[in-house]
Image (cartoon, rainbow, N blue to C red; front, side):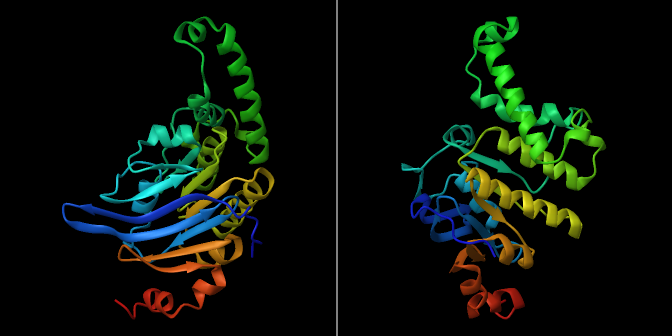
Length: 262
């Protein structure tokens, strides 16, 4: 199991979050903190509200109640672009890559928000545009090497197997140099070998770069192996919050997963 590496400071604080869609509660009065530098897994049965919670964190959904604080900045409403600028990067359940573009070019798109050059500087490839392009490519090449994608760097992502596409999506998220990664089922549909590879990459990002990670994952073996902190949701409510061992010994969590409470 991962050791607790956090600095003792909460980078993300969710307080009394409630989210409804046309009167149907997706999230009900949930609060939890994510400590800087930790890997936090959000788990629960299908339909528990886990993806909705990630969508609240990065501004896709705006909760009707509650507040969020990220890196010391409190807010009630935030848009995804603002979240990205603050340092929150996201991957999705369904791969959202540019199918016709190469691995290199897909990862390069993760640098877009970091570019400060004007339209004309970019069009003429002068000044800041030229410097940012060189800096961006150097950073992306390091990510490609880190993720073991050198041999396919020029390959269109549409021709890659699923596991490699998920790795490219992780690379694109890393290209923005985020303070926090939100990973929505990063290992769904993978083979056991692909899961082991992805688990290792997530841990290496956390250990070597110090990136705080919040992930949704159904494989309890993976959760127990790589997480410092686990939050459990069921029917939009929080039913567990603690270390992996504490959560796995929580009777309410056991009942939810075995279907007893259903």
